[in-house]
Image (cartoon, rainbow, N blue to C red; front, side, top):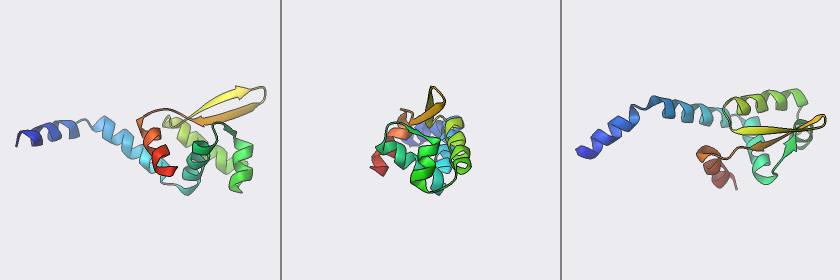
Length: 101
C-alpha cells in the first residue's frame, strides 16, 4: 500500500504528465513524426530540404516545425539565410530516437 502513495504523489505532478501528453500528441501527427524520423537520421536539415524529402510544401513543414519548436523537441541554428533544425536532447527525444531507429 505504501507504494501506491508514492504513485499517487507522482501522478499529482500534473505538469510533467501534461508536458509528456503534449509531446506525444505533437509527434502523433504523421508529418511531424516524419520530421522527427528525418532528424533522427540526419543531424541538421533545413525546411526546404525537409519539404523536398517529405514531398510536401514548405509551408506545411514550417507549420509542423513550429509546433515541434514550441514543445522544445527541435532546435534551430541559422547560417546566413538558411535555418537548420535538429532534435533537442532530452528524455523524450532520446526515447523517440530509440523507438524510431
